[in-house]
Image (cartoon, rainbow, N blue to C red; front, side, top):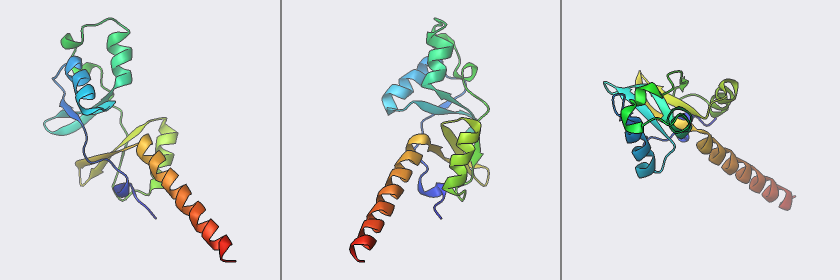
Length: 140
């Protein structure tokens, strides 16, 4: 069975909690991403997304450089271990209506599982399964 370790992203954008929402927006653009993990003393304390930025800064006409990123982050993130089976990670995401899971190993933050990563995994699995069935049916 495949585990989260096989599909998690290890190179993740992070930003310190005392930086501004403007800094987060620049990070999104520079790293071509739509989220960042918020750190305090090198430990994840939240996640900020483009959606958070739109809803809590742009839609309220706030000045992004004056708003600390900690004020717009989500603190209620869900976690899994690298050894978590992919199917269990999918279920956790569906049950909690979330797009990302933070991955921790021995209390250390080691990566993120995203919907896009899961979709890629499932696409590859379907293609492989379909190819195997075709080969098997051709050999009958």
